[in-house]
Length: 388
Image (cartoon, rainbow, N blue to C red; front, side, top):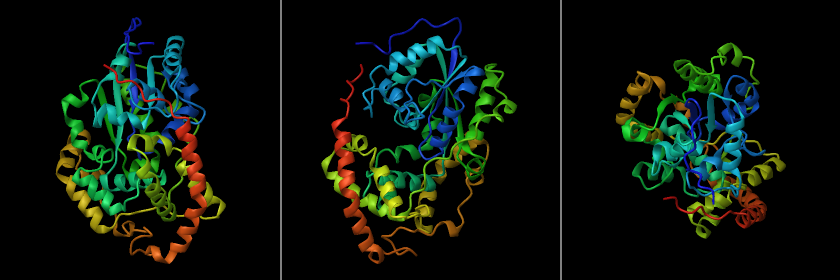
């Protein structure tokens, strides 16, 4: 078997690898669409956004980096490392750019090994991480909706949020502890740009902020000098991604998750529910149902989450941006904190007002969900062997 961590002889000089690590729910899919659409333009300026590790259905390098990090895959992973090595060897470039939201976990929030860093260093790359941070209440609301729409979370939002704050929910909880990013033992493998996923960034588009950050990093190191703001202005605009998930979709997703959760451990559940969102979304489209985005935030929940992180966020904002957290992420106006959760006392609820509709749609969609999960389960590649 190929030893993918075997040290390769570096070229005449070390190159730079930019690792865009998300995090989740910070416009990553839109940014990855943009990078994919403009990969040829980037390459002409010396920045390689490799095809290896990206499939026709994906614009990010999730399977490649999961394979390197020794994590379960959504595909077989066969030939990925060989294709990657061949592409970086034959393609002239000063800068390698990899993107996957998955990277935020092994690089920053749960750095249990350094397999990815060792893999890239063995190929002659210095490393620079770029990650976007989002105000925790909005992040948790968005992360919750993501989990539910994929059939992976059945608890009410208030219970989910309290679990995160209490430290009893993994994943989302780890990804909100931004103070850990200030620890040298977390970041000593390279240099870093931690960017705020603020309302200003969202209005302009995360791709604009990322390219400005990228150009700045490369200018400091004298790399890819042809990549200028003027050149970037001629790039193909980003295709917006991730259609918003509404309260009816959330109500259905929770019921689906309640059916699936007892059958699988969490790792398997994540791997077999990749298609659940598409199945529910397609059914709602057939029904002619269009919804505004879900929000589980109430003034009380929002204030509780902000207060929980306030003390440590102050130091994060000071160190990373030289401004108070409250200036980077101003409090949301009360009009934005009116929940539309169908299971709560909201303008769209309580659930009893639409219980028959939710029950009918659940009966309608569940056979398709079962077929999607069964197909995913049948095609799962084996778990990777533990790396020494």
